[in-house]
Image (cartoon, rainbow, N blue to C red):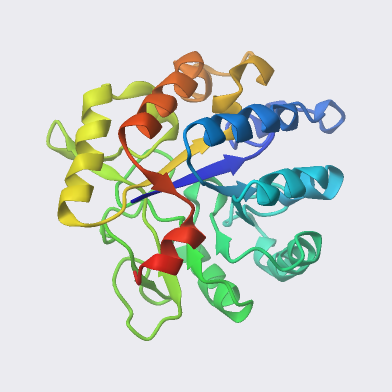
Length: 278
C-alpha cells in the first residue's frame, strides 16, 4: 500500500508565484474544485491525506467537513504556505499550530513543509511537532533539486529528530515519510509527484513505485490541488523558470495521477500507520 498526500492550497500559494501577486488579488478559486477531487478519489476507491493550508479552512470551514466526512485525513501545511526558513517564522509557528488545532478540532496529526523547506536551518520544526503531539512528517525529499532536498536522507520511512534529519533516530516519536525518488540518467531525482509527475516519462514513475513495492516500502506521492483542477488555475506571466515549473504539462497532471491510482493502491498516512509500524 502506498501513500497519497494532496497539498491543498490556493493558486497564489506556490512559492514561485507569491512574489508576483498583490494581496488584494488573492481570492479563493481552487477551493471550488474540492468536490471534483473528492469524487475522483471515490471513483478510485482511494483515501488520501489533505495537507491543507490553514487559511483555507479558516475562511471555508466546509472544506474540513467534506474531507473528513468522506474518510480522508486532514493534515497541516502551515497557515499561509510559508517557507519554514522565512525570517521570524519560528516565533510564529506555535501560534499557527494552535490555530490549526482549533480550526480542525485537533484532527491533524501530520505535517508537510511548504516547498519541502525542512532543512538544517529549520530543523526546529521537528521538536515543535513532537511537542504538539504530531505523529508524522512528510517534508523530506531525499534528492537535490534547485529549490529543496536532502540527498543524504533515507529513502524509506524512518524516525526523524531535529538532530538527525537524514538518518534514523530510534528514540524519536516522529515518523518521517520521505517522498518517492528514483535513479534517472545516473542521478537520484524526485519521482513522487508535482512537477516531476508532469515531466518524467510515465514508465519511469511507475517503475519507481514498483521498485518500492518490491522492497516492501510505501511509495509516498504528492500532488497539488491546483494540478488536479487546472481549469481553476490562472496562468500568470511569470519569469521563464517559474512559469515552466508551475505550468509545464499541468493539463496532463490529473490524467496521469488518475492512471497511477488505477495501477497501484494508495491510502492516507493515518490509515497506513494504523496498519503498519514505520
